[in-house]
Image (cartoon, rainbow, N blue to C red; front, side, top):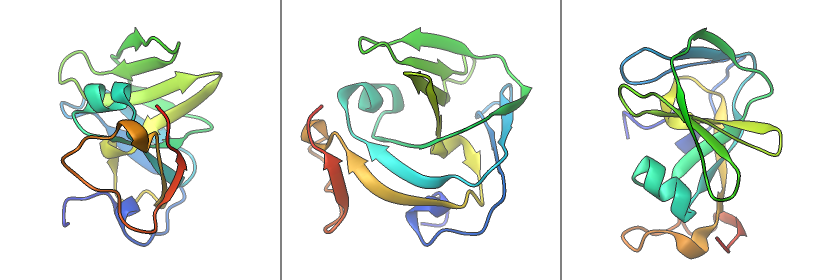
Length: 138
């Protein structure tokens, strides 16, 4: 997977993460490595991303350019996305903000460790055998 995020393979060393939406209107830096990345298979993530969403918690995000729109989902979570190109950027719920790993530029220092809400995953793919499936409802 040459274009896949480094979080699908062994984590690469990183001290900060840089990211941008597809059109470049939104650019940011997270001042730490991604660390634990999880894949969320809930219906909301599937519908907003077109697949599942890989994310990591960001303690702080430094925006270099930000022109984001937001949507509040039925669970109260706020999703930020680029209104021009549609790239998903962040998800915030209960005071915790997660960055969509797909908009990050390598290396992220991330490690895809778990799959959540697999009970509502798409039927066109399988979860890798042995993967942590900590939450199965969704």
